Amino acid sequence: MRALPTTEESESVEGREVMPPSAPRRSEGVVRHLPTVEWVVVWLAAVASWGRLVVSLWHVHDLGFDVQIYARAARAVAHGVSPYSVSEFVYPPSCALFVRPLAWVPAASVPRVGLVVNAVAVLLLSVVAGRAAGDRWFGKRSALVLLLLTLTPPARAVLSLGNLSALMALGFTIFVLLAGRDRWVRAGLVLGLTLAIKPMLAPVLIVFALERRWKALGAALALPVTLIAGAALTVREPSRFLSQSVPFLSGGGEQGFDAYNAAIGAVFRTLGWPAALGWVARLLVAAAIVLCLAMVQRIESDTRNRVVTTATLLMAGTMLVGALGEDHYVLVLVPLLATVGVAGSYLRW
Amino acid sequence: MCYVLISGAVSDRLGPLHSLSVLTRERCVGLVVLVLAILTEAALRARSQRLLVRSC
Image 1 (cartoon, rainbow over the protein chains, first blue to last red):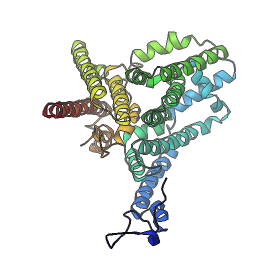
Image 2: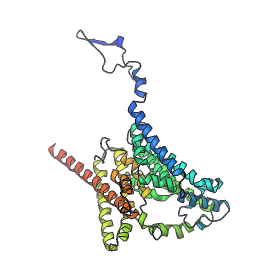
Image 3: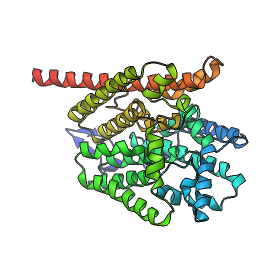
Image 4: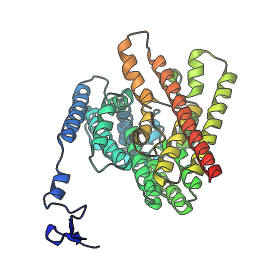
């Protein structure tokens, strides 16, 4: 690389002294890395809002409904009992090992552990989403995403429940960051790890097929298969995941769950509209998504834009057309949200 | 997109008329709007690319 000429080396053309256009002063590089007032204000607002949300939830009496399920499953495993003896535990056997450390946490502290872990996950999700959108690490974009998230019900829901969705959304965002930089095998491994814990991101596997990244697809499938097979040897009655959990999840959850479920089928049920009409609506949305995926694949040459848009479309489609679309699943839309205002983003409004 | 995330936050303050199931319906509509917005944007880009190719 050619060194930039110093002021003393400035060239003279036809008697005119021409200063090199990018001759920097020595202090300029340092100044560029100093935080601006704007950056400080945005980050202060974001962290204050995030902290306020965490503190406001700290003493809520019904905190950590979901994380307590994981803790009960972890204690069951610790006592040599099947995690599926906890009827609400609907995750793969490998998840029971992932949440195993919760068995060491005193029962009274479990909800707050869930709150802290998810609060950190939401913070990291914002930081990675900003970076995946092309900003620098801990840039203003990340702060704005965090600030917005702390004001939204999905973030509040995931923090108060202690659900694994925040970690899954973080995994999704890391996948988008890595795939957008053409690091497909690493992206596959990250996605595979999330699938072994909670398979809500399974539709994203289609992205590998659309991009013809077969080696990465192999990595994304091999890792969870290995982890689940390994866990099945350790955990009691692992087959209950298939016989008990999968039918439960594909049926849209338990009765009375529709109020939380934004899937088209559930919304039609709560409105009392005909099921046949619901199927027509699902087919139309599915057709719109397939058309959209085909167009984005054909016209979009930028990998980053293509990956974030197709992956988000697949997840939005699964929430709508599938059986289950809980409010905190919406967190997977954050990487696309972070691209608002970025050149080439499909969210221009 | 913002509507999908924020709708509940706004509706939370509108009182009992906006029950949980209403928020869920809003989220469903918001997701459909998001899909349609991306579809429209992709269609507009595909059209402008076609026009560009034709003009060359």
